[in-house]
Image (cartoon, rainbow, N blue to C red; front, side, top):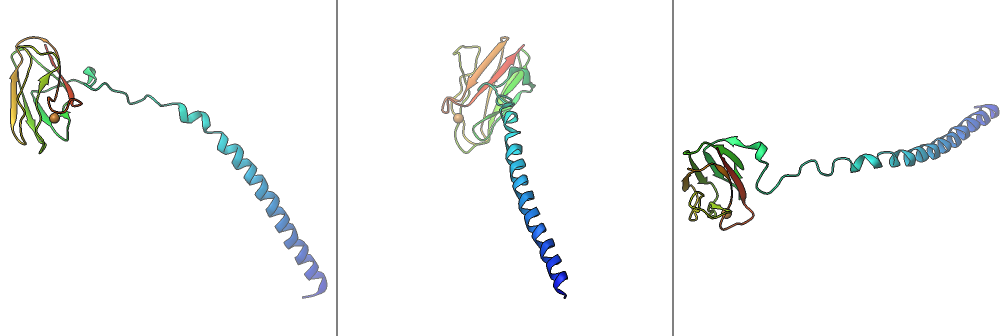
Length: 146
Ligand SMILES: [Cu+2]
């Protein structure tokens, strides 16, 4: 390789290194401005999935069977007709019970049931009956009777 070629190669390499450094600085700067851009988007959907403990009554399911599974009533909100019998089946190894929030002869007030046992109650009066587990107060659900 001649002297001139070595100089040219050196200049070219030098330009590549300097150019790379400048490009790198510019890239870092643009990354910094980019990282500031998405900030407003993160605070947009904070309250998208809020539901009350007893369930959204608009999600009522026409059903007369309710499973108690993994410390939850499912479906959480059911809709039945006056005179229909609702049966709860406990799928958990833990005991649960079905107790109306407002004590009344028209509303269920069951004794604890063990795994695979059932409890039934016939609703004879229209109304919205919120209930809970007598053992685990955080387990809540609703029966709408009409
Ligand atoms: Cu329970």
